Each structure stands twice: as structure tokens, then as C-alpha cells.
Length: 186
Image (cartoon, rainbow, N blue to C red; front, side):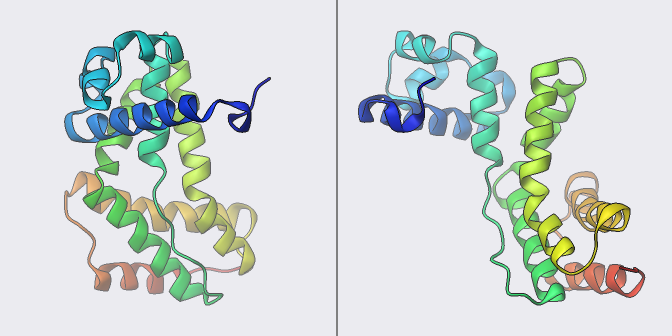
């Protein structure tokens, strides 16, 4: 099987450009705007080129989702409180300012009836939560306790951002972390 390193640089550039354009379209206009024609127009490539690399529209959609979900994370400092606040702040920023909330909502809806979308959602969840999970593990929050801490912290940010449609403030995130830490056992 060929790896990305084996690909011609022009092919890698084409794939990068198309996935970037598809991701932008997804974030700006939503899932139903992701057609080969719309992405080709935005990326500056022919529809034939897109069909050559992504014959199934769902494949192009999955690539766009995974790219859109690849958001920056906080660089760990070694201080549990600081790192949790930093990671939740980065997550909140991605939800609010980079339209990740829209992507998550569409992906959750699609995954209910599409096994391939369910796989993308599982990948997104595992990769997206890995940095916070590692912060918790590094500080003794393992097993079910670590899982619950992750659910409480990330769930509260999701709830406020998506259901209340309010961006969590720095004070809110600090209170969330302080409350979770004060009421948890390692």
C-alpha cells in the first residue's frame, strides 16, 4: 500500500488543496453544500480530478470532516489546573470561533444512520480527546475516574457552546476546572 510519502508531490498538493476547500465549505455552509462541483469550483480543480481521488461523495465528506476537526490543542505545562484550563479554552475556541460545533452536530446526526460517519465520529472523539485524556492520566486520573473527569469537563463546554449557544468565558472555564478538581478523587 502506498503511503502519503510515496505520492507525487503534485498529487499531495491536489489532495491538500481539495480537502482544505471541502473543509472550508463544510464549516461555512454545512454538509449539504459538499458536492463535487462546489468543492471543485472552490479548490480550482476539475470535477474529474475530485472524482478520481474521491469517487464517493461520502469519502470527500469524511476527509473534510476529519480535516475540519483537526483543531489546535494546548501545549501541556505539567500543571494540572493550567493544562485543563488551556485545553478547555482551546476546545471552546474551536467550537465557537472555528465552527467545530456545526461540524460535530452534523456528524452526530449523520452517524445515527451511516456506519462510515459513525467511524469518523469515533475517530474524531478519540483523537480530539486524547490530549486532555493524557493530561488526566499523567496526573493520576485513570480508568473510570479519568473517563468521568473527561466527560464532565468537555461535556460542560459542549453543553454551554452548543445547547446554550454561549461561548464559555475564561472565568467560567476556570470555575468548571476548579469545581471538577475539588470534587474528584484520583
